[in-house]
Image 1 (cartoon, rainbow, N blue to C red):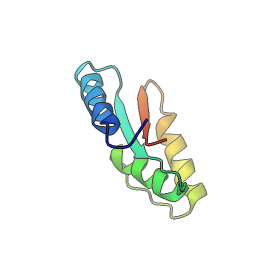
Image 2: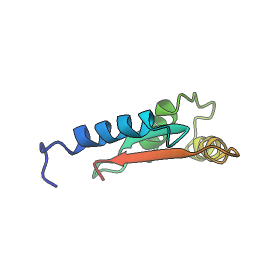
Image 3: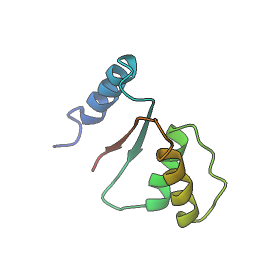
Image 4: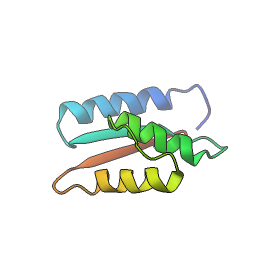
Length: 83
């Protein structure tokens, strides 16, 4: 949709509703713009999940994220905004 109509605000409100309903154990969010920056997306996801990546490479961060997201019995929602 057009910029400035409130999509991001709506997404943040939906996230609050989901958090209050305890539908997921963790919720992460990242902004994905037209100029894809995979490193920045990974960093945003890790930070929003409260993680501190020890790895500096894209592949290293991907492995850490995969491990965290694959933990048994965890329901994780990752919201990608501005896709």
